Amino acid sequence: MQNLGLSDSTPATQSRWKSLAWPSIGNDYDVEYLTRQGFSICFLISGVSLLVTFFIGPVGLFAVVFYYLAGVGIRVRSRFAAVSAFVIYLLDIVLSLRGSFEPWLFLRLLFLALLAANIRATFLAAKWAETRTEPPPLPVRGGLFDSFGDVWPRKIWPAGQYVFYVLTFLMALFLVVALAMVAFGVRVRR
Image 1 (cartoon, one colour):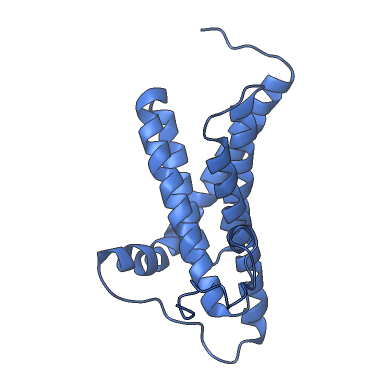
Image 2 (cartoon, rainbow, N blue to C red):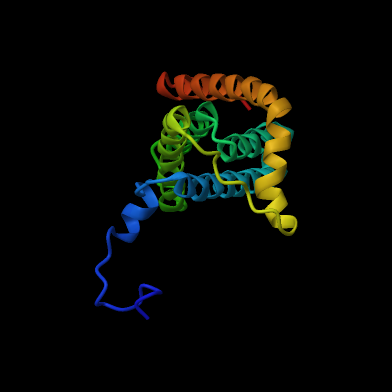
């Protein structure tokens, strides 16, 4: 029971909320865990965006590809991808509120906190890479899901990063223009 952390005799080093939003990162294995988590969160957001495209049209495919490539970038420890995913998701949350309460706000804020933890993890990984004397841990090579989250991102990112840079610019431009329109009260005719 103590090994599993189910016993009260073992004090917790940090709360569950802190371990989700601001986990302690002490080595490359912690970074590996967080980047895998970041990939999963971005993949989930990408999947939800894919479902939304059925309602808003093919424009939503930009978000699908953006969040998938953001997850790929986070998985390979790209600081730009981690910051971009956080900022774009934050702007999307701000734009979606527009004075009304969104029923999924708590879940979206939790995802935002997890994306913030990935920013911290990628910056710490880059800092450790400068002083590293041994190579980082290799990803697990197992079944299809392990390949999907570990092997494919390392193969996709060298070419996919350029598509990601363009999509980041387009998504940021769209969200900033949309926020400006909301802020200045510009209404779009239907």
